[in-house]
Length: 275
Length: 245
Image (cartoon, each protein chain N blue to C red):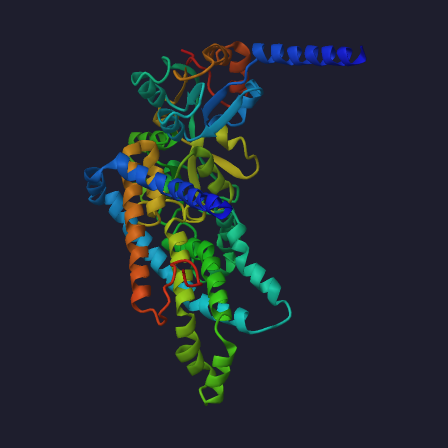
């Protein structure tokens, strides 16, 4: 009798949480309406922002994947002195307020930054360019991927890896044919997380890259600039961004469940199979 | 007996603080970013929110709890007045536009015309921000719009962000108010904009209609127009409210 009485508490909590999370999103679409949304799709500011966002997020996620995966693998499988410190360092950008991350990027890669004169010597200038946007997105989003990737690699049974090596496969073949497929679900979950974070990146971008239509103005930056000029247009732009994000994440999820190598169902952002 | 005395003293103290609070209620002032340093000098007791005047205006329109709105132009308060969101704005001070460059002046900018040179990293405020629209007016007056605007690398959301990017040394030049340049001595050098090209920069202040304390808000606005406050504004580099003929 007691158990049944308490049964409604977690359900109520879940309802409140879901309501809290979904209400702002629903409110955007309720206030905006489909014509305003379609209007914004033909707005050159939105189209330019969409292209900038896609290009910079795409390149950033590619870099995160190519550099972050081996990083996570090393941190997951090798035990070396200072490993706990390395793991903490990889997670450090997460606790940095994005604006501070932007300042840090200036301090490192700006004209007067630590690498400033070196970059200058090569004729390379990063601040206020599209590359700066990619840098900012990659910086704030990579810890999310690497953290998930480490967990994914740690979950791979070392006996299976050992068996593969015993049967004669080299380290590279073992990694690509055994480890990667087993860790794939966690890796994709991590990529979805870092992609979502990258899409919404604002503070570090506006600080380090500035905001210029067609070059550095991503969708979040365009929405912020529009807010002071036309609040309803900004709301509609927000709707467009939410719509794009939902499509991309749903695409990732569908791709994941279609190519899933296990029979158990997976949650998008977690590693453990949902009940 | 002792307990009663203690309670009596506490009651007196509570009444005293309540009385002082009643005569001096704190109001919320939304003010243009360029007023960040001078407003607290005029009246340290109020709660300030500084930012781009257009951002503040948008927030007021969305219901933000402000009592007074002090904008870097008359356009924004007039728009709010037309919508019935604030009282009729009055001009309380004026300003001038200048170019700032990092002290090392890496791009060798000595005049507005130098900004037409290729490769210069120019930072301006967005066109909706008062200082951004004043910048566009200056360039129009000098017939340099296309030539200079092609060097813009970023459109910031308020004047202090423009100043910061130049003071940091990362931008080659930026358009700010002369009063902003003085807040970071030693970090920037000022390049003057010709007087004939200066736009009419008038700061407007009004009482927000949804204010919960119109009396204190109106008192604040009146205080801005007194000789003492005007002297402090002029000392900070602002121009007198009324142009001397």
